[in-house]
Length: 464
Image 1 (cartoon, rainbow, N blue to C red):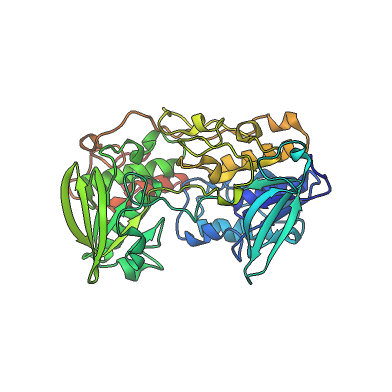
Image 2 (spheres, one colour; image 1 turned 30 degrees about the vertical axis):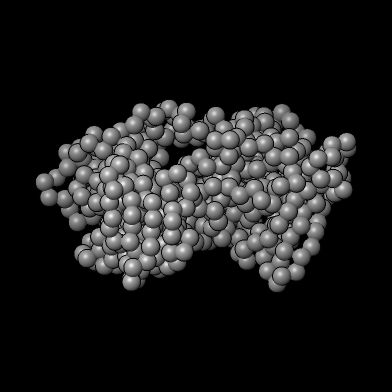
């Protein structure tokens, strides 16, 4: 191994990167956290309005919590459901300000390349003993280099959204659409309300992010009746969209899928499935969409498109490292079969750590959402278990690195597809009322939270 007096570099100051730093400090090792943003947890700040479906107990790392509690910090209610903004303000900002971590965090530092001192990836003799060299560019344009004994890549995938094409590529006109297009989870009912209220909006995607945006738009339409919501699913099945339903051990996650089913059934959102967009173009103030629905050509206009088709990793800064990537998921090869949605049946991803995340480059590991490649549904708790194991391996505690210290909540998601015509009639599993109450589209999410808080639900069938 390289000189043990060198720091362990962590790329990314999000929840998993900061947790890795806390575990290093706990083991007496020096971390060095690098992030291109000017604030920690920059991705979470962009979705501060979103309420997480995992409660606080799954969103806090054990080593980080121990550091904070030593300062008198009190943990939030473990069963409460925080927003992303609350996760930042109540947990991650205090953690980053902790005197054991703060001196080791360098913000405004964009990592451009990582390699080995004196070795390119083609030279092998003795390369594993050379320290890592990290090249960076500062917010002021300055550049530099630093050395590390090991590197933990927790840079995530947030800056690399997948395009809207059904073939995984950008459709014609997508890259020049400008403000007619948004990716991810825009705050459609809050900060970005002016762009969506009273508009005709197409949401493309079928995962949690797309579902959340559709539900927010349906709520917006209740206040702004001229708002129209089109939901483009790139498949004609909604099994994954439905999620675990009443069988999900995270009730808010299951309720999200049940609410989606209700939105589809009641027509609160017009569903286009399977939708394959071929071209988008500006026409005055509108966006003209050329596509096929169930194989038949269609053309229509919308005011705005939200693309929520997932995220993907970038490996550009790793070109001089020996990184092994599964050809399907773009995850580490040993992890790939555990998370490949093509192979999954009921249940959750098993906990995993240093062994499953290993690469041919000793001392280098990808953790967090980036370790999942293009696979969906990453839980922060999974990332915390990853870095606990990886840091133990770096410290030489191989037994701890291979010990499982996490039990994940079951999703209840099965691989068997659920066709659109088989969507349950009631948003919470029971019969739908003849006249849905005003907040019906969000009813199941509200019912699930009500149950967690000991309140009565909104009455849309049995509470999950």
